[in-house]
Image (tube, rainbow, N blue to C red; front, side):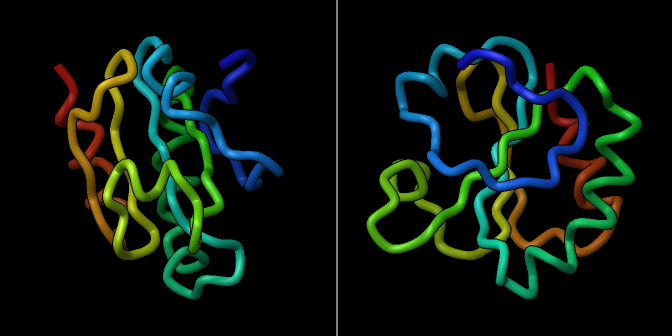
Length: 112
């Protein structure tokens, strides 16, 4: 994928990345699965924004998930938000429904 936003990304794009595009990602990237109307997703945003501003080198891709969305099914996402930490396109760790900055810091601490 070209032009991945580094640091916190507040917006869901109109289209989700494909599995192949995700596999081609380099470096550390967080995929955030959720929906703009989801209360849990909204509640997680302040902590996510705070932590991501401290990790400006980490990519952040929001994926608008829901019925019929292939990428969420590929990653077996069941609850929102689900944050998946990728290292060079491979899942390294995940956290589901983070509610505090520590949840996100712990996720980022699982990189090699």
